[in-house]
Image (cartoon, rainbow, N blue to C red; front, top):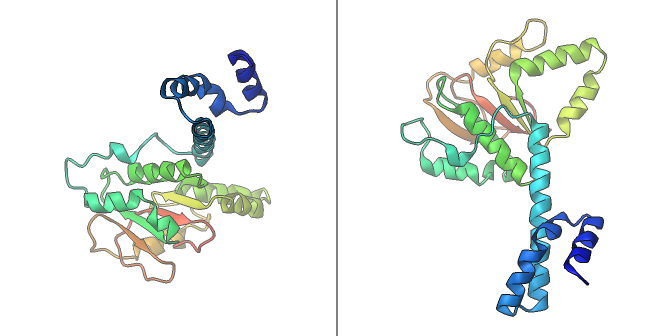
Length: 223
């Protein structure tokens, strides 16, 4: 079978990862006298990686991130209240696997949104569905959905995401949207802690400063 025939067959079977790497893998196999099973394994890995990347891009698009922030781009040249060890811990997504809520606190301009988006994109890269919403927009959507009789539909849509990221968590929200009490709770969660990222389980008591970026597991009660 010729190379063109093989590429056509791979395309027809929608094996696009194999389609894009087949010739390079074949050349490597010939040059190193690779075992056929090893050659097949590498092709399947290419296909799996292609599919994972495609899913990650789709999830990131659906998430609605504000930017293309990445953890690798985090500027650690000045103190932002989060040490490198904590940043590396967050990058492992242990808060997700541990079923913990993650609250990001800090002053304006310290990079809370950047870090929240970066973690969201890391979650998407691992195939974890994520939704990013500024709190003001969330309450606007809630008010609009209630007015249109689609409130339950909105809740179902939000619950499809495994992780919900709420940005500007303690910013003022539109009156009549149900967010007044929500923001008050965030503002009363504490006043003396400096900028930090902290994980907590759902049954723990909040004791941190206001205006966090809130990354939480979907299906858990909002805090």
